[in-house]
Image 1: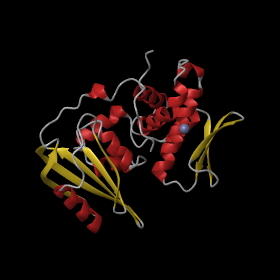
Image 2: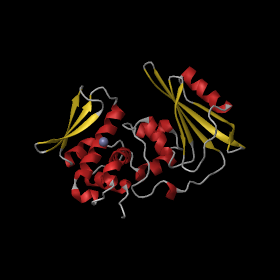
Image 3: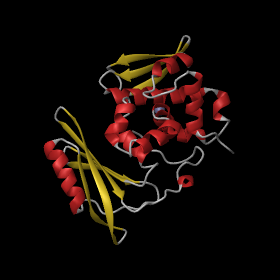
Image 4: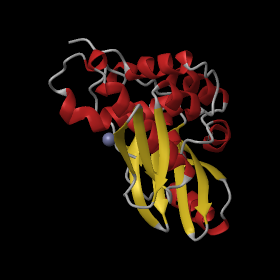
Length: 252
Ligand SMILES: [Zn+2]
C-alpha cells in the first residue's frame, strides 16, 4: 500500500489553515479540527476526548511550553487519523499510531519544507533555529537536524549522558573523546555556547570534526547538547530515512 508522507499531510494542514511561517500557531489548526485545549493537573501528559461537537485535548498544566505544543500536536495527529478517510483501512496502523502521531507533531510544528531551508541558512546552528521555531524543543530540533546534515547529537542532563544518536548511516563514534569532553565541560561549567575543531576516532580513523556545544539551562536543570559534525563532506542518503510513513520515530 502506498501512503502519503506525513510531511505532506502536515504541510497541507498548514496551507489549509493559512499558516505560512514559523512558529506554527496551533490555534487555527485546533479550530480547523474542532478541538479545544483544556489544562489539567490530573493526567501525566495529554489525553484526547470526544466532546459534544468535536474534541477536547487535555494537557497537563505543568508541561513546559514546547512539550505542551508537542503533545497538543500529537493529539491533533490522533484526530487526523481517527477519520476513516485518512487511515486508508491500514490494518497495521493501530500498533504504529503513537509513532505516527509523534512524527506528525514534529512535522506540524517544524515543517520539513521550511526547516530544510532554514537549517541550511542558519548553518545548522541550534540556537539560531530555536529563535525561529520557538515552540519546538532544542531536542526535537537537534533530532530533526540529524536528518538534514551529518551530525552526532549528544545530550547530557545534569552531568549525565541522556541520549546519543547520529544521522542515519553515519555510524557511532565512541562517546566521550577528548574534544567532545572539552566542549561539554566548558558549556556545563560556564553555561555558554562553545565551539571547537578537533579530531575523534570515528569508525577506526581519526576524523576531523567541528563540535558545537549548547547550554539549555532552566533553573537548576542543566541540559547540554553537543552537535559533532565531520569536517569532510558526507552526503546523507535521504531515501534511507524519509521513506513513506512506516519508519521508526522516537517518542519525545
Ligand atoms: Zn498518542
